[in-house]
Image (cartoon, rainbow, N blue to C red; front, side, top):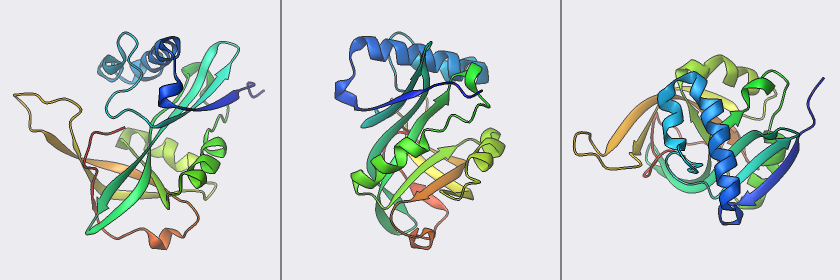
Length: 195
């Protein structure tokens, strides 16, 4: 039986300290099992890892935060084309709810339409390929492989370059347009830290 999840869409500045604390705990428990390093950015009450979201879609059940997705409008460069997109990040479903079909995209999609962007995208690591393919089987999104995304690091370190380039699986959601309108190119310049 699918759990009862109630959804909340909120601007980042509407969150209280208690919300950040609860979300940080959610991310530690959700990302920690994939590797202790993945939970490190969420120490204390920090509920973001790189760039801060503009909007959040948060699902709650009787036990607290059940699911989360962050949204951030930004310009990216795909090949030679500058494009206003909404980056999707900080995706997560509480581990005890995985496999129940909890999907925030039915809530997120109308929000994306209101934001006035033509595309939303999210980059995921290769290890999540099968999960992403399963989530995209409804046809709302297209999975692009062989794409590199260049980003700045969230912090500057003396022993690391200020940018990184990753091979990711890109999930692209056309919003009120066709996927054929997505520019060609195998390099996306994020011009900022990952969400």
